[in-house]
Image (tube, rainbow, N blue to C red; front, side, top):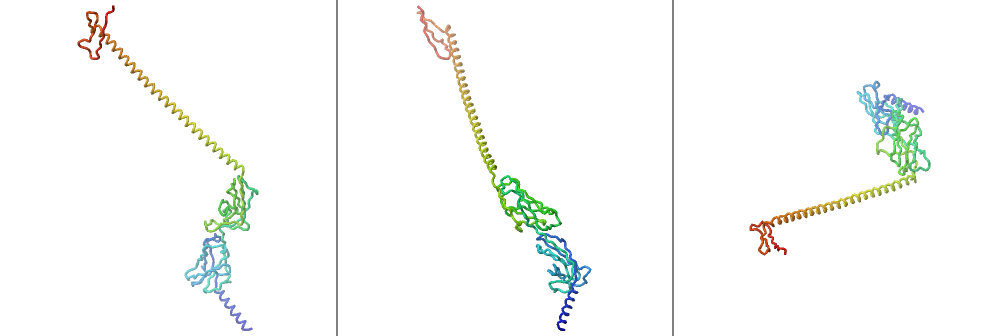
Amino acid sequence: MNMITIILWALANQVTSQTNDISSAKILAQQKTISENSDLYLTCSAFGKKKQISVTVYLCKGDLWIDKKLQKQDQNDTTFTIQRVGLHHSGNYSCVYSTRGDLPTKVTKKREPIEIVVISNFLPADISVAAPSDVHEGDDVAFRCIVSGPLQTLGECQLIHSYLMRNQTILQVQAFNVPGMEANFTIEGAVVRDSGHYSCVVLPSKCIQEGEKTLYGNNTVLVEVKESLIFRLIASFGVIALMILLGLCLWWINKQGGYFASNSCVADQQADMTEEWQVQREGEDLDAQFDSFSMEQDEEYQNLGDEDFTYSADHEGVYSVAEDPPAGPVYAMSIRALP
């Protein structure tokens, strides 16, 4: 019995000495609310508490220390960095320091913790569709996205972004009303290609790295847009009207082409007639000139008659050209006396 008492007393003294050798340090954080995949910076300060000695500073989460660093005697602050935090890094953080570098994992020293909250980059939301069972082309399709449970945001934002997705592809971006805990999306004038599985995602943090994660919602709704007979008739009528218009255009072009060709033919005929008329006029002018020349020659020959004729004794006169005949053809004729 005495041996057991001695052992328990020794253990109690050891624990007491360890506790007395541990001191609480003040913890500081640049941001107490941080987005997922960001770096968390925590500073443990022993200013005004530590003597001018070297100590080991321990960063604690809950009752367990998770990291430690040596702090020299001329230092008072030690900064710890947790890179690319995840949601599991949310919790209460604190700092202690000790001259010992081999403290047990669990720290029982009373501390002054701070709470660190890690906000998810995206949060799956519940989606519902406010539309009739049958959606046809031209109908409007309305979606409602809600988040069940508390929603934490960076900087206590009242409006954050939310995405409407179709088949895992972002389709629309809309503001999510944090006080109302909902967002509404509308597809106006739906067409067949709008068919697919729709889901909704809320982004409580500032941004999300493209390609970093696949976004998905809590659930999906299937929307099937059926082809409308009216739209089909309108499309068919439009094609027919276009073909008729094209035919009229071709007919008008052909008609104008025939008209131009006819005018060209008439112009060619008029040109031929004009040319023929000019040739005829030129021929008539040549004939008139020839007739005028003949008449002048006849008059000249008659003027030569009285002066150049000689007569014989038997009244059968024969005239001959004078000794100095004019240049030109020589004419001879006989004249007999009338009985």
